[in-house]
Image (tube, rainbow, N blue to C red; front, side):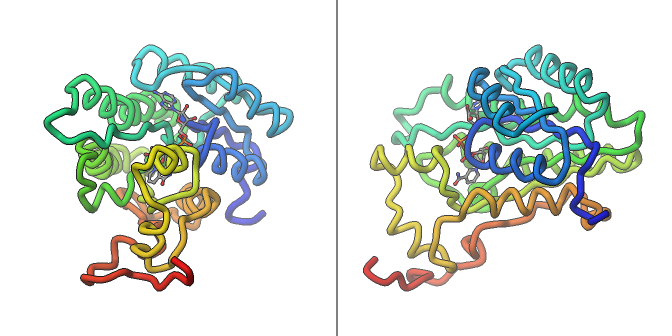
Length: 263
Ligand SMILES: NC(=O)c1ccc[n+]([C@@H]2O[C@H](COP(=O)([O-])OP(=O)(O)OC[C@H]3O[C@@H](n4cnc5c(N)ncnc54)[C@H](O)[C@@H]3O)[C@@H](O)[C@H]2O)c1
């Protein structure tokens, strides 16, 4: 059996109906796991689960709602009899408004989804994992967990916060052999970014020039890193944040990072 074979394992992915979460769901399903796709969009979560084939489930729920997190974890544990991997992918974009025009409610909502939701899902999933002395949790930070994105205060704070939460949970649960890690993607070609580009808030040409590898990343690149972190190849990796960003946060020169033909 290969190190990245997840046959028989139960995998729960929030935000699994789209983008990085969906690519991750497909990657785990292709490696034999049973996948629960949990998403605010219940209908899309269910049709995505059908797309993956027999044995997978789709669940609706808002990860900012504690009771919904409890329901999602309970339904997954009941369907699969076990939860081996939790991937916290649910997320929303920030307002991009000038800071003095930003609302406290929007700030709180973003923090509640990214940080509060990841905390609540992890806490509830750990109740399933602790007795089995096995489990892997992967949170999704960002280049915004290492660098500031102006006008995206809540997003920057949340993605920095997720790195701290990842370390704290990793240390707390190490004795139970539950590993907690994060990936920190650069700009990934998903509906999340496509929406910001369409709204004129991001310019793909500038992103490509600022990224040493000169491209927006495919969602599968993040899924591959999550597969690695969930696998026995990463058996001694916990509390870590793995940048998967085409070199974005490594680059610090006062110039473009990549020469783009025609860009
Ligand atoms: N795309 C990027 O460039 C990028 C870069 C770094 C980090 N990320 C992070 O990756 C994660 C996934 O982003 P994506 O690009 O795949 O976005 P996406 O918009 O394609 O998918 C996000 C999914 O989360 C779901 N969701 C949103 N709020 C939710 C809630 N309250 N409860 C349950 N589900 C909810 C949405 O319905 C959607 O299906 C996010 O945390 C995002 O911050 C994305």
